[in-house]
Length: 454
Image (cartoon, rainbow, N blue to C red; front, side, top):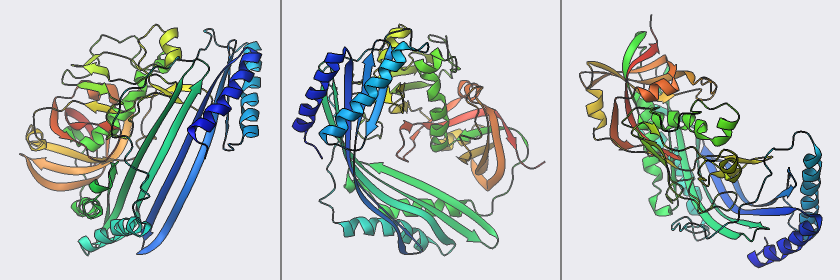
């Protein structure tokens, strides 16, 4: 892998070539070391230890933009990749599909201060310890209860990476990050009844990893669903667990993208300043939360990141933008650029839904009968982004007067995402702990369509 100074020298040479051609150039380099392992039927099933590096060039020529990527890091390969991007940019600048607004590189400033993003490269942890963690994710689930008969999926992984960004506007940035993750998927069986339970974990510190807790949580989830019955078809008061809520909030986030606004695919177009969701909701996009996976000190264009309010008391506060769309649509620049395969895109980083005041138990007492939905499936195939309509196979529990009566399965939870988020009538004081990039609370929603037993 090249050092920072070696990369700088190569970019200086390429920048000089771009200048001769009347072009601007940006080079990003990603270098990563990763390890992963997983056990199945008490045997090591998968194992990998990899070093990966790639360089990507974005070249701007007139109104054309060219992108090219390589995994070869010698000087000749880098220049060839630059030339490919340059030629694409020249060709596109002449085409009828060239953008109306001339693209531009962002003149990056000092990145945001973000401590805790890099812990280590985890080389200080012996491989035998990492393998033991991976083994424990299966072993402790199987040993938790004799009804847990199989753990078809489980695993441990860690990664350490460094990202460099150079451009001909004088931007010279780099950032290091590291993380480890683990998951366990357990199957419990009693007679002919079989149920699954899944849990996941993300952290930057090995001290926070507890394989036994992860495995036991997955096992308990599978056991809790044994003996499940179908609920009656009808309109129900529902509590969505924070894990399910985080998935639904995640589906809504694409509609905050200025690119989606421009392409007329956002259900939130022309709604800034309007009440779009429940007035209980306050959402922020916060890339400076180092303990979350979407943390970053600068975005894919080199802009310093910062916290952006998205929803305040149900009112749409901001859309997410990169440099191009902030200029094109005259919107605040939120430094939300991510690198797509062919062009710069927009994405949230870490989205946090502000906690409410009530416990989950209090939400479950809000009606005589309440369904607690703990898992939804087919989250992408069962959701239509163009309309917000969803129909999701689900499982959970029936509560009466605040007491759990029975586990539930084989029912479909359906509705419209935007309507659901507007009709939320209660938030819990508890966030999900599954290590995702969305922190959400349990949500109380009345009058939800449930298709089950007829």
